[in-house]
Image 1 (cartoon, rainbow, N blue to C red):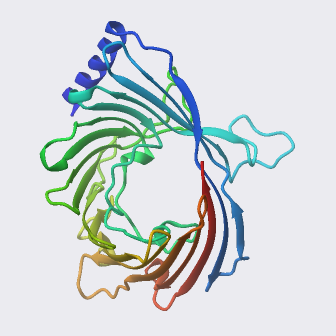
Image 2 (tube, one colour):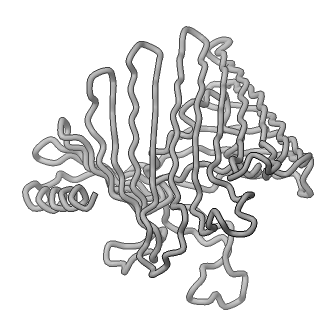
Image 3 (tube, rainbow, N blue to C red):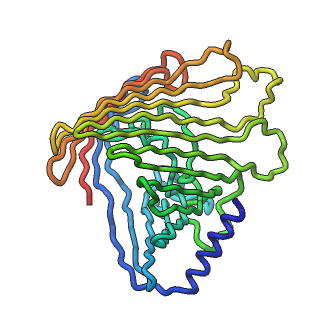
Length: 357
């Protein structure tokens, strides 16, 4: 891995010296979306919200035909200090910060190199999902499913291959702990376990997309030797479209880091890994109307079969209707055993109106 990273860094440095870039252009994109969220089974007010992120993109072409792009989101924070004098270690509540940044160099037949902070995720945990609106286990309500990690949550450098036979692409990423908005001369985002991630997407026949990803955490040399298990995980998915119908199936796994020895007291209830299963069916009634049904389950696997565990289950029905320039969506999800706790159930309903620009 170190050899790969050195090669990528040398390539980027060499390209910056060898080629000049033409003047680029700046665009702003995103979506204006208003939502109304109702959750039963949780003590919280119904949520009314409007999206508050803007995505800025700059791009250009180099003299040798390579292209580059830079993206950055302006994202007001939902947390922060409300004190009259904001401490230097915190930001004010609602302060707009630059996050989700990425610098991409596309080298035609040589592939693509990316440097990203909180962006460029390659995890395939949702590659199977054909939901009409969104993955309901990825909304503002947290049902507690443990998913595999992703380089998109780190500061990473990545290489993506050009398209290979059968529409195949692969990527390798190396990520470290990050700090949103850190500049090129920053001392870094902190210290902690780094991550290596690999992904593969292929389309062997018309309508079929197969995806897979794997990652592992690299132990930070903090002097501790108590780790009994380092974090790793991955996912695979199949999605097939034929006519107006799309079906998807996938699994994802996460083995969390553990410092509990097998012989330690209480180790029998220690989770060795989480296994998540997803199935999705979508039908495009016509050019404007789509409906879908999705089911997800998450299972804890502990060290002994005698330990009682409870699986999280989620069923979701969604409808999306295009109004011409806008999309109206209604999504309903039923959750069982939220947070892997027996009989802790909830229902979530989201009504959303979105406008793309």
